[in-house]
Amino acid sequence: MTALVRTEEILRDLVAFPTVSTDPNLECIAYLAERLTDAGARVEVHADPTGTKANLWATLGPEGDGGMVLSGHTDVVPVADQAWSSDPFALVERDGRWFGRGTCDMKGFIAGVVAMAPAFAALPLARPVHFAFTHDEEVGCLGGAALVTMLAERGVRPAAAIVGEPTEMRIIEGHKGCCEYTTHFTGLEGHGSGPDRGVNAVEYAVRYVSRLMALKDQLRARCPANSRFDPPWTTINTGALIGGVMHNVIPGKARVEWEMRPVVWEDADFVKSDLEAFCRDELLPLMRAVHPQADIVTEVIGEVAGLEPMEHNAVRDLVMELTGANGTDLVPFGTEAGLFQSLAMDVIVCGPGSIAQAHKPDEYLAIDQMAQCLTMLERLRARLV
Image 1: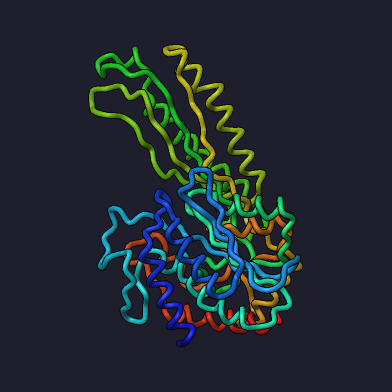
Image 2 (image 1 turned 90 degrees about the horizontal axis):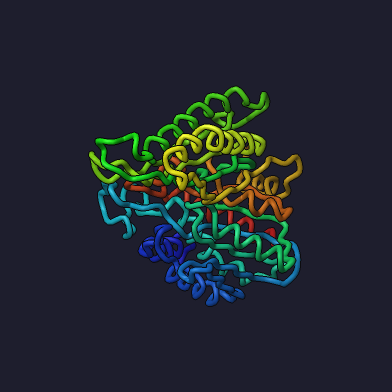
């Protein structure tokens, strides 16, 4: 059985696990644990505090520092309200592509590295090969943060990491950070005929969104002169404004779900300080003049630093040799790579598929992209003995 055939078999199984971030991933992790155990890996499963999600950390080869981490996240985004041509949780091959939720983002890479595990295990590895499969990357990199904390506490020091997010097999040496927040507004309900006797949480949420829009323009003006990102400035996106029950009721609750992707961390501090002052000095005094218990609370979903391009990056140079690439790129989307970099690893992002297909109906992974990934992993295998 070829590596590509094994990869398709594993990917078919992985897609069938509906690991949407809101749902458990334990069955998927158990499947991966069994596959890696059968390949001879030392496997650990670490549950989150709820007991419904888990990370997997597995190792082939000797104990000790150094070695390579092959990293991917097991969660996928929802399929609700998307018009799929086929069952999103059943792998379908068509026109040289594998269709299914998570095929490119990023179960294809996971399937590939698990398919290659027996080949890695068959060698007298001089350095360890680690497999890191996480939960909840799509909602704040929660699993990745827990994983790197565990590694730091244990003193585990891998030398390098390849994060297999879909890059069309381009080598990505830098990306923006990703910060996700939910801001909750508590007002005072009432009858719509007497708006001055209530505190309309939705209206104050709208003012907050207006402030976010104004900050977007200010962030453009703060764009670093040497920024290589596209777009080159820190961005803000308002993902949702939710509140209210019906036409004639003053809404007492609302929330704004928003994100920020900082080019430099100072921009994140600037935005958060501005919003804190705006709520404290402008919105809350007006709300509490009517209802002293009114409040605005921002919940941090996740704050993940970006991947900083480094002058010296051994895994970047290695993968350029393995793939024949003559350059590297930066991307605006976030990954878990910055978390691994915080442990002083050399890190790149490189994986099969295109981010343009991620999060959409009829998500797919081109089979020739997967074949390129497997070629890279086969060449990597020869460099670890």
